[in-house]
Length: 335
Image 1 (tube, helix red, strand yellow):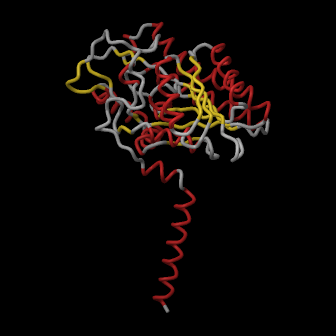
Image 2 (cartoon, helix red, strand yellow; image 1 turned 45 degrees about the vertical axis):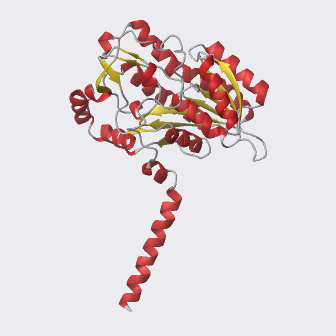
Image 3 (cartoon, helix red, strand yellow; image 1 turned 180 degrees about the vertical axis):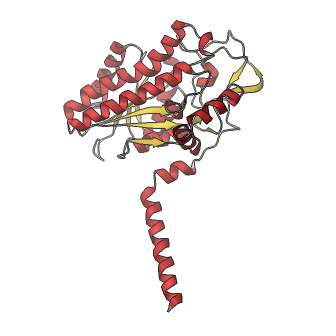
């Protein structure tokens, strides 16, 4: 990490909208210099303006993360402008809401290339630079769906499972080499982002995150925290905890539950969506880049579970204090 007197240099993929844009805000508030990577110039321009209004500096680098050469060129451009990269956040993703048999091969391939290979290529470019300096942090933006797959998102779930697997592999290599470079994964719940507005969907009704829905600022702060603490993984939201532990303990029960409820639960009742609506699977959608999606009324802006998991020492100290007080009280009463 950079010293307290030198601005942190950060790269964020998928930063033109949703969680990626919120992550850029979180680092900007702390004065970071940020390389913003995404395909859409319009969305990047908006993110740059927001970062600079919050106290950071930004460099927009139009990048298709499914192209390794573009990712590598973007990394070089950021270091040329701001200096060595301290933190690299892989957030870029793409998905297709559809039954697997209704998904075309090129659609599945594209979603996998952006979500999985985009993370692979970002990690490659980051590690190449960080291991040479023996410092740095890579944060993979994951999902509860990297543990518990759900219907209608086979490509996305497969990619997130893959990201978790290759991240674990890389971590063991870094440990073997006694490297000071760290890699972590932040597993997210359903979030109110623009992906549901512009993803490719073959469903009759508008796609929606699986409730409970969180505002993107919650995972953004989780990513910032993970970038500055030693934690193998960070789970965000009680629903993420429930999904991961539930599928570990009773996967067959989870399968049957999702078979009954997973189709309707990912569609907004009474909100038809045209199968011809513009989507960002292959090209950016102009005029739609934003941090929040359309579910502000349903989304929560807090997570007691996340606070608890990022304040373990505080809770442990409080528990010890309460125990000590209880013991002292019992001794006093006995006397």
